[in-house]
Image (cartoon, rainbow, N blue to C red):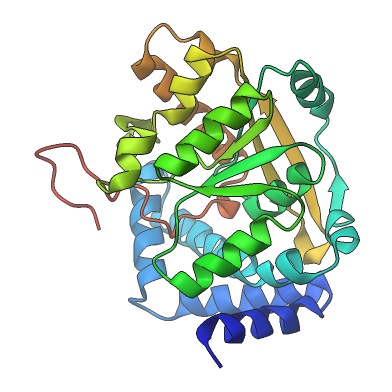
Length: 301
């Protein structure tokens, strides 16, 4: 039995459980990450919270650290039902669609293209599945170093009609063609693309994120400023006790209207930060967001 089969079987087993049970198990796993000292996820999250919330006390940050690791555990195990449960069951988990989705539908109907930005906030996997079930969606993602998990994630993310493309030259061509057809692009804007081939494709500038210079892809801003595509920010809030998800959606006209590329990238980061501040416990603080540093700066992690 290869690793892909093992992971698939495990997630299928978890998918058979009610979401409330899945989230309880995930919460326990996240609690263990908080309780066990010196594990990688806890160290990274603790470092990020100290950088981004210096105004909070150590006790406040530790409380947020615990909450965020618990939510990260839920996010990991909910891949089971999201990737393997029936489509109807998954979509019923959306308890409340975004109040402003009419604006998104109108933008799609214009056939000028839409940039749908989904940060690592709440259940970004749920958001991607929901929108790909309703609109022609091409999803940009950074391939995993684990080939087995990469294949599994591509299959899961594309199971409701979304087209999943990698951060390479072929993926960029697919994005441009989809935009020319007036379709929707789904992009995670808060990935640190580092210095690999993805930088050449997505571009990079350092822009403030919670007051810290963060390596930020310029792809969204470049496409928004060069085309007539509308830009929206969305996230799926995870409800307590496994009751499902609530979608949030915000239009970001300032990203396309910015006078310079630098200002546009800064506006994008500010919008993502503002969304995170409404739901800080559900952001993936265990991600190395500040891994790439400006020239001359020392490493953070």
